[in-house]
Length: 333
Length: 123
Image: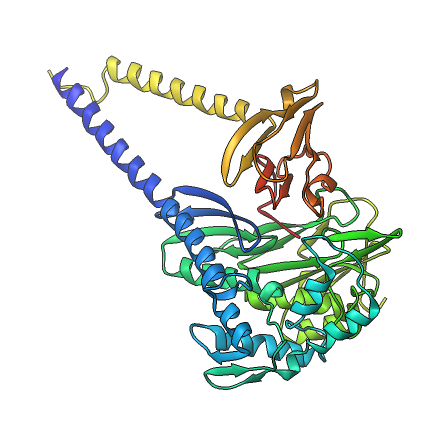
């Protein structure tokens, strides 16, 4: 009997030890918080997941208040706007180089200097259609082509307002991805306001929001590790005199982009690219947008106002329509 | 006398442990049948609602900016109203599927229906 008791005890201790080791190396953690004027969710799996999920929150908050925010007086972007330029620190030179590259390749349709125009429309506060004259004046204060980017400094005319709203979420995903690379996390899914980071060696499923429905998704993409961003006209908009006005502005005329697209999803290895290109492609339209995305090696899903769904070659076997009323189309068709 | 590898007592202990494990997994899988919604304000869960059990309307009024009014009714939950400027949360309508969520950013209030078949939603 004594031997039996010893055996059972040994087995119990071994089992508890193995269980504890398994738990620590495979623990799960979820974190949800508000930052960058949006909602962030992080689902983490792997060694030290709880601590990593807390660290992600710290990373996003620091990035927002110290680097990207237009409003935070301590941020690099605030100081650059106040001084019409200045010395660049951290990764700011790389961010600006990437953004200026997309501006150039999109023939100016992607513009991250629309701060004055965006403020005029009042999105997020009390939105209203501005006077045409005011729009023209605001457009004079916009234009990424007026930015002079040097090796470690930048300068631009007074009145130009850098606005990282179209890339901030993607930059956050890139910073988080780098952070995860320094840990033993196996898998992670992080959403910064709907821009999604998929991290780990497996296939993940990502729903594309249904523009026609109150909620839910119209298709599911099955994707390996990457970043996914979507721009659409169905969420942030207001109505005036029976007409809808959404928040993605065309830098050519100062009005919401209107080319028949309701949603554009871009898949890239880098968050800054997927985020910026989703806006750029939305403004450019299907034909030009697709070309721009291809030049960056990105995959795309466009949905037009007639519920046609245009999917790039690399996603054709990775998409499943899950809502009625949508039709898959070829780009040429 | 040579000891047997397993005695009767060992087998009984193993059987009891196996039965306990089976009960645990059955309980777990039964629990996941429920559709549960969580209401959180600034990252903290303030209400958990079993939508499977909700028939008559139940109203929640979290004490936060924009005074959102949340109603659970007939297996669904929604932002009934909010004083926020863009009303994105109200336009989300009724949530009932696992994975559905609606966010009122100015009120830092989120409704999430737990569970769901996809890893993430892009919007």
